[in-house]
Amino acid sequence: MNEQNYNLAFVFPGQGSQSVGMLSQLAEVYPVVKQTFAEASEVLGFQLWDLVSNGPEEQLNQTQNTQPAMLAAGVAVWRVWCEKTNIRPAWLAGHSLGEYTALVCADAISLTDGIKLVAARGRLMQEAVPAGVGAMAAILGLEDHQVVNCCAEVALGEVVSAANFNSPGQVVIAGTVAAVDRAIEAMKALGAKRAVKLPVSVPSHCALLEAASEQLHAILQNINIETPSTTLIHNADVKSHSSPEVIRYALKEQLFKPVRWVECIKFMHEQGVTGFVECGPGKVLQGLNKRIAADAVHLSLYDPESINKALEQLHG
Image (cartoon, rainbow, N blue to C red; front, side, top):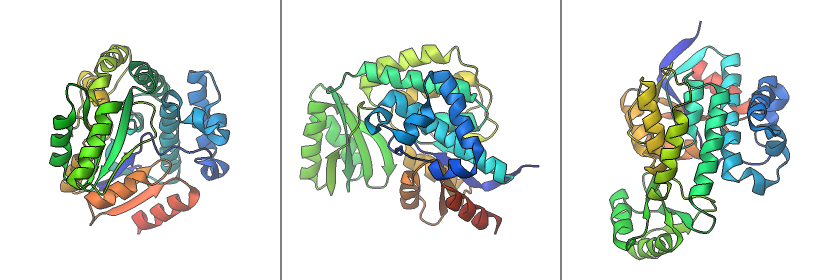
């Protein structure tokens, strides 16, 4: 019998946490990892595990490949966890693309449909903004309102806006190259500790993707969505939804609206969550979450050792 822990939230990372060789140690111990990637490969028509294991890195980092790879990775780690223990979180959330992983793990979307969806999402994003047109930059050391106001001041009719509210003092902005460049210089003048461009091929979560979001919404109409089995907090509105149609709308909005990650973590913390577990490769979210909810327990699951450590801590 599965045991839901009301103080526990599992969170799933998005693009940026991928790396060649990710989950290799986990796959040596748990066959379900490669089985999950095999299911994804059937949908995609190429060997995803081979790309994840051997690269090349440039190909893995192309958004239409990164998105299915990260979704499969998060689901694979979740499946390992479910094999190992009956402890289940009462809350789920995912950062950007990770929201799709959370929906699969909440039994709202099948893995097959999830892979189809994020492959299409990646393709639509890449097509919406040709290479060299858009950019993203990380801004460290300013207040959220300073970043928002500064973007508005330097836009000059172009697109630049806050895309990810990642943690206190860390905001990612997105938009056209020239507008992002102007914003970087203006933020430095405001006293930002760092304002640096990110190596991404698409400027996510900004108005440049609004047309792509309509295309994504059309695809979502043909995807079967069930009521999530676990309460899931969405990036765009920091709410949970049970209606499939509202979930479709939340995913459409998420593509061009900012990821309100700080609010998502704070909301769950305020509801009594005292343990946040990052489920998937890397520890990016664990680092962000520590700065948002400093008094909570923060764990990550990505290899056999980290899973055993988490089990010890949560069973203890």
